[in-house]
Image 1 (cartoon, helix red, strand yellow):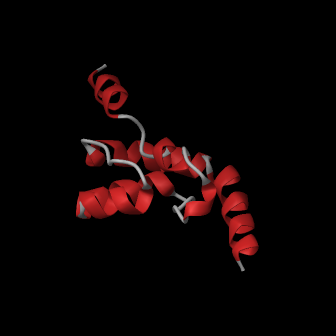
Image 2: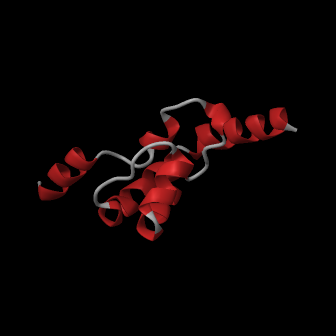
Image 3: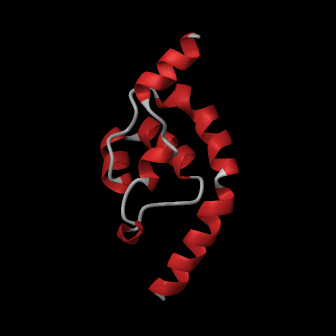
Length: 88
């Protein structure tokens, strides 16, 4: 119950980077996990790179983002590959 409350109030790092235009160079593949790791290293850099403020507790969200990112690979891999092909 406590985990649900913490995650519900902090948001989800997997969804946050994907809620924006795909043309601004944001990472798509494993974006939530990468966002949490970047936020643990440097919050300001993570906000600039991903275009959204990092979560308050990225360490708590990290295992959940990793799981959701894994299941979202079916969407993010083809989109990232298409965007990479279009940019070249």
